[in-house]
Image 1: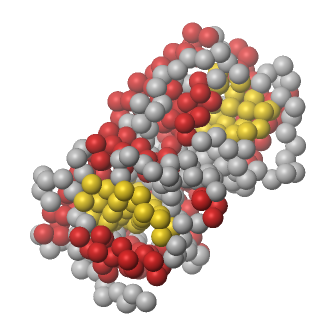
Image 2 (image 1 turned 90 degrees about the vertical axis):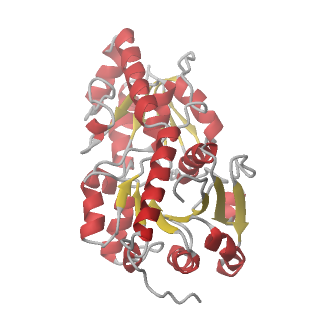
Length: 373
């Protein structure tokens, strides 16, 4: 596994559908870039009705996509897992603990867990309520790839026994999210699935400013918002935008808002894929603040962190156009230099090869004898 192309099997939440989840766009950018490096990728996805009804990538050209209906049908793919150089099990996979046990038992190569929801996962583990990862499994995975960096990585190793925890942030495919300029349709937009813990921030930084400024235009795109939300008349609601519509949406926004889940704010170092996508387009970002954000984008120079409706409205009404454009360009330059899918694919390959070297040297965790039923 030193320099030759790798055979990778990924068991993830979804590649075929971006409806109601941020996993699909993350996997698409990463695995497309990984395959472009000469590697062979198979993605095993649980066939569930809510994604079956909203498939926007049923036949990817960069990897083999296989749908399986249940754990019994997954058994048919044990040989692919066994023959792979590496297998990655992702967060939020249905029956994820059982899927992980199978992957750990079948695999002869590197076994990795890719957590696109690390703070949520750890909160669930502490509460004894994580349905897709068992606490004891963490030491059996050779590699814990984490959406969250910073102090969480040390916590995963020291408190949970991971042999190697490494940050693998989300990323963006610059070819899919090129710099665009469009006539503005919205002064401020937000793209994201409804989440109860994000809603107060959305209320404070978009909905309340919309109420106070009926002359301005706002938009919220994403599914699963409750019917009872009181949307001001100047807020356009879009139930779902497929990924190929994201660039035009961002380009038509003078500014766009990034809102972070509470567990991820508490952990810090958890940049959203939407942050990278909007920046790649060149749309200036407003965001809530959290530890580690300044290691991604510099507040005041590459991203803006208003805390109140008044501060949001001051930006929308008073910031000079030249400064707005400068902030958008500065963020784009940073994202292209450090956070493209090409960079993430290089990191992933490096982590997998390092883990393989540890296994050869006998430094990897020995793992348990897992009973697969």
